[in-house]
Image (cartoon, rainbow, N blue to C red; front, side, top):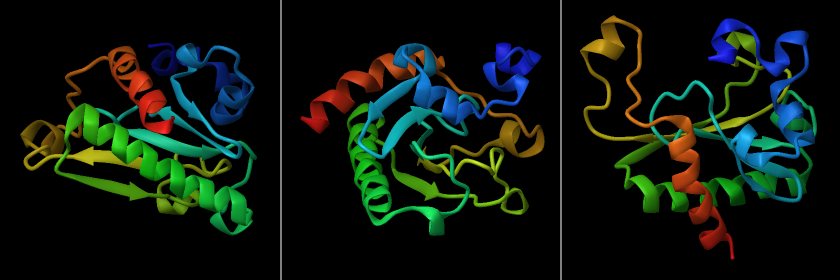
Length: 156
């Protein structure tokens, strides 16, 4: 609700992803996994249950700015996230992608991030199509509590 009311940490202009990088409370920030170059975090405005993002630590805007190590780890952590989401939610498919630049729909264009959205047949319905509203049946903190032990289990 703080984000919806404009009381979010980034309302002062800080990048929300850089705040997560510097954060000391991964639970509060919904950070599920920290690698050497990237981290996995839940999307605060999810399209579906389990919608998460893989984000490089460096504040860069383009895929072409990623180092080979960052690029490799981004895809390795994407694979890990999909294994975790399979175990937690058993989705029938995924949307995996990067909206690079505001013209492409990036909500936070200045800090590159890759979306992983679990999908199920029929998950688009009248409410979301006509009302431009999503119904997410699980609170973000519950999703975090469900996924965190799976990230630890699948990463070991």
